[in-house]
Amino acid sequence: MGIKRQSPTGILGFPVAPLKENGELDLKGLEANIDFLLDSGLQSVFVACGAGELHALTQEEYKVMVEAVVKQVDGRVPVYTGVGGNISHALEQAKISEEAGADGYLILPPYLIDPSQDGLYNYLKSIIESTDLSAIVYQRDKCILTKETLLALCELPQLVGFKDGVGNMEFNTEAVQLIGNRLEWINGMPLAEVTMAAYYNLGYRTYSSAISNYIPHISAKYFEALQQGDGKTIRELHEEVILPIHSIRKRKEGYAVSLIKAGMNIIGLPVGTTVRPPIAPVEPEHYEELKGILEKALEKYPVPEKTVEVS
Image (cartoon, rainbow, N blue to C red; front, side, top):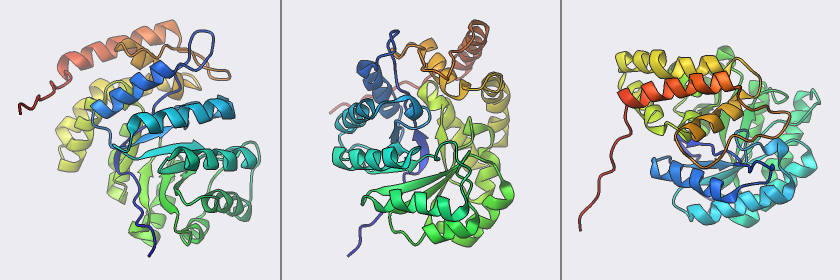
């Protein structure tokens, strides 16, 4: 009897890789990030992916992060890892993830090469088949699949999801109609709350949320409004919070990562703002602008108080 597989759904949590000022990995900061995501109700954790600066981690740092998160989460929610880039590194990362007890991995694109479709198929197939963990492919940058290539990958039982970071609505419409619920369809566009309403109409029901690292209750409020067809709340959240943050994010390459750390630092999470090159830290004026947006957002949309159960 085969393994019953299911991709994580809803709002996906992507923690950062907290770094000390000297550039060393800060495991206490990572622990605080994971605790915050779990306490905020995120139903899955994706460690050492794009937001977690996979591109800048050594394999030893990667191993330490994955093992620490799997141990901390302790089965409460699914833990997925990021694998990708150099095929040898990706296969090693997949093995590390399996040995650490992760539930699956998100396959990030290969570097530099503009591969053909059969080359991409072989790259992804090699990683997917290398372990028995569940796998999600990530459509972006150097990994742009045709629907025929994606359909061929669906023959692999380990494949459970497709994450789109390109925004080609024609492709997404055709792929969802062709493949249906064989895969979980995940919106992976930068600051996915900007585009999730359009994706939702195509059949996407899951997205990765950068802002859930610092204002998860607002992401949850947005998603609830989307599911309920509450256009008024969606417009208000877009105008007052989501689009202003998105505007800052677009001003500089790399802000998709460093702006997350800035937001976390502003609300008091001990992760710092240090990033590794080629990512650059947030400019002081942009940091202050983000701080102003968050102060107004938290005043209008305060963090809900936790209900304490009395036994």
